[in-house]
Image (cartoon, rainbow, N blue to C red; front, top):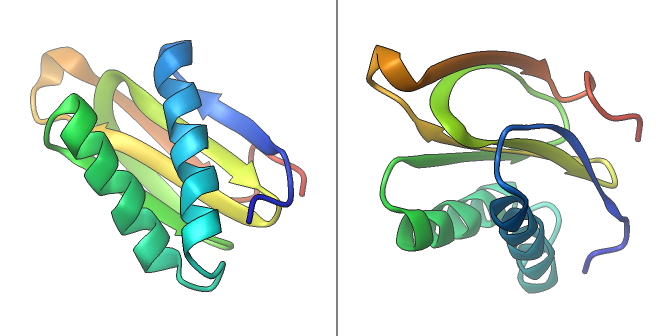
Length: 110
């Protein structure tokens, strides 16, 4: 159940892709218990792999840090209530890389 409004902290995605990420998070929160963060992440990752090709990674939780390299235009970090979502597509080539370091508490006040 989506009880809070999603707050986007950082992104370089197009608006349509951002909206899909938020919609999938809402659906996952309807389908899974909020404590099933691995299942929520798996659901969002698989849907993005299906829609946009392989290589997506998704991290969901209440307390985590990260430093990731991702494809340009393929990164979003947002929160719904106290739950943080990090979704990005892995980049292996230097021409399409951006590095972002986040703590789940950096961008959003809950």
